Image (cartoon, rainbow, N blue to C red; front, top):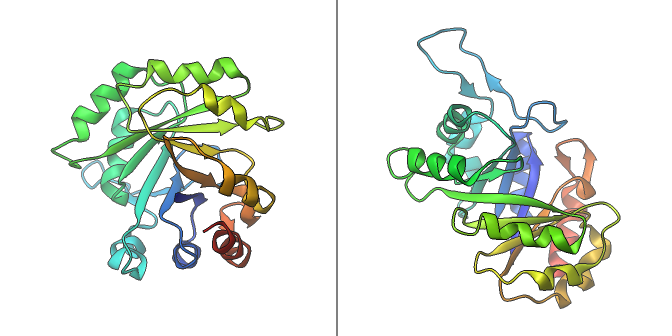
Length: 221
């Protein structure tokens, strides 16, 4: 089970979260989000803007010897903005949370792979409020590498996931906290790949409580 901790922004906190055993780190590039990761403007038409975490991330990838992946979260953003952040932050995965079309996704992949980032992976988030939402995956099955099935507030019926018959691996997201440990350990699906964790482990927007997170992951694994 891959552990993706999303909504990260503070360099030291990212380092500490990785020490708990997280596998993927999610950076939020959706303007207006409380967890938005900003660019550092160059104020030049020649030198591109740089990533606000770039110096720290480029320093041995947070000083980690363990391999981890960086996932950038976008929603209906312009392709050139996504490409710029893939370059500036060394993103391994692009997560799309908006109403992006398969044409846009396919074009984005061709732009990035292989010239800019060979093997870039793309994840599509699908908000799940009812069983019919689970059928939306069919529109994207040939265009993405992962799905994030994001169970919305009040949606606690995990049997909905049984409706997924696709071949693309999926992450489970939504309200996932310590109270879901036993349920996650017993959950089974042939394409279940990992979980997406975020505000349930925060003490403030973008800042994770690593003590609680480590206790959760130790029990889960």
